[in-house]
Length: 136
Image (cartoon, rainbow, N blue to C red; front, side, top):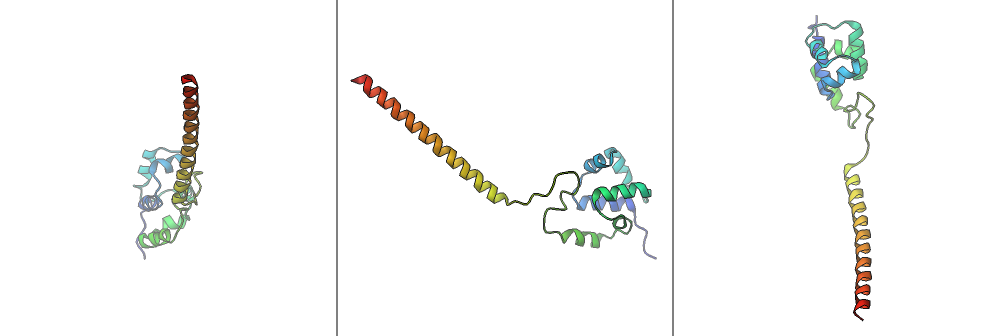
């Protein structure tokens, strides 16, 4: 017979692997952070609460009931995008290249700089013209 899984520790490890803070899980469950901490110390969690936790973490209830460290790490490691790091809340998955965004920002700054420089040159030309007319 396999060892009995400590459900609280399983919840904690799954939460940690998914990079979900206790405060975030608590907020989603409508309980306090201290309550989540207490849940993570329990050997068994009542089925309704376990179901809510699994739904919130977007994992099957059996993943908690039959938790296995190696299988969990292997499963989470199989994700190659950002979908796991944003499992709670309406944060969405952001699929953009930060370098592209950085280059866009640099290009925008360059265009703004050129426009400002052009404006300054026009002001200088106008002031020089006004000065030369005044000298005459």
